Image 1 (cartoon, rainbow, N blue to C red):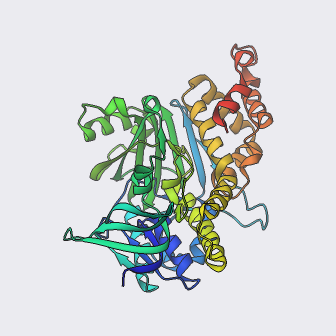
Image 2: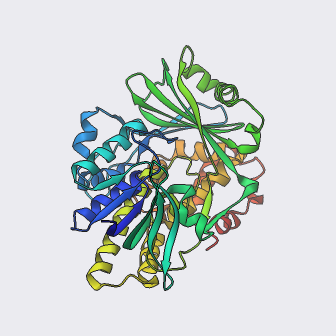
Image 3: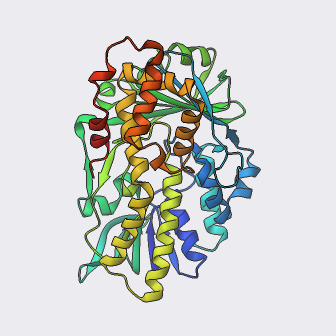
Length: 428
């Protein structure tokens, strides 16, 4: 039978989590993915501390802990060749629990998600590519699919959840994706063995031609992600460009002395984009299909899990009230906006700061001189402290001025428009 309560497109973290949340409430769900599992994806491969309770609710934490994942203590930041500043995650503000972030290969994490999906008895159709959405009376009521043998199928449901990521069918079919070719970024990622990273932190190095995120994901496995303008990679052989850029930074060169690449250099383009509101009923977007901001020290897995959690709550209310109209979609989008808007604004602010060497150095100097400010920022980046604490004119000015105190005679601060920075990062 090809009729369900909910069809979910995509078996990544957002899709699997949505399916598990809905199945636990008794709904009949099918998950479609064009890939066959196991599969690998470009990812920072660490998960914000705030994700732990959601992973517990999904029944995943025991399986994750059995893999003996690395636990990261916080974030280390190096600005333009300076020594890294290590900032521990602050205790949870409500219960003073010590906070750490999980770090494990994305290949392993996605495998555990799919295994949990199957153990829960949820139908997963691999190698099923969704070609189109089916509309009736202005609402989505199903999908047109091709299976692994290219045979066409039609599946119907009261609701469709698109968790297909940056290239999801809903973004293409409804022309919802908004990007900026002028600021187009690409992420290149690879694992290294034999590296000598001296601490258990997510380590961010900011230096031309972009920045890197480095995190241990195993006993002798380091994930190194390089983010640069995509135009710099055009016409270059991927591996040679990546290794040259990564090793151009003296700190990275020291950490990777004697290390070797393990496996290919993988890439994902179009890192930053926004998504317009869904204009119809019967369709929700979760995970990266809702939009993505190149997050610097943030990551996308928590956003995927939390948006899935919100979608599960909204869909449960929709089925109980038998209402699947545009109003349901608007309710979900309003919840999601309130949850993530300030964090996205912070990500945009950080993007503007890190590419300004003068400002970036002084922000790191300020954080080094003010541990409370530093931990406040890292707690927000870890998604368990409210972003409103740092997305403010007062916090920004306080941080910059603290970094200027040792060099108060230098020019630059009085000419910098902090309010314009905040306004440009938060245009809504």
